[in-house]
Length: 276
Image (tube, rainbow, N blue to C red; front, top):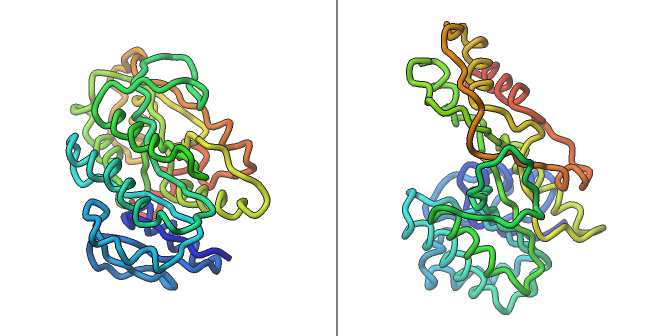
């Protein structure tokens, strides 16, 4: 079992910390504010953007760092503080700690390409906005470390109801029918846990696209959800699929990981059954 520091205990981080502790690991969850943690998870309050608050984390002597901080607003400054400076500060605070491995939760937003071709880890990212650029800047800080970058596609799961709410109002469906890629929160957390469990036997790749097995056009998801919710949407015309991209998870599957929710139907059906 390992001593693991989970820096950033929002929705994804809390679920990951819960799973790691349940598996018998010693888990410390780092977050800015006090919150009840899952059973077996120690809470440490600190702000990754404030180096003086991070001075204590070296005393933990973590073997593994998972950095899964989430920006609190969609602005260049917040992304810089949350991802670039935040990661830089945590790495500096742990500079004398011999980390076995670092996992950094990044985003497939680094791919600004709009194409019908499949994109995988070998395709160079071409960010078109500050969010993708800041993510790449943060990823670059891990050069020279034993680290793995996890580029997550759109996370959905309990409490993340934007797509369900949109499906309920067909008149507000967007005019563009682009490709969409997603990962259920539970699969995102379970995959990180799986890679951590594999460290004893194998070194993970430097980069994974963390996304499910079915990229799908937006209107396919909306029509399916509308049907499940008994919302009349048959008269809504489906635009030609255009824009965004399709992401491949073949490297993720090659690790031996098996999905809990391999596609949007399985994932959203579970949410609907649970009342979202």
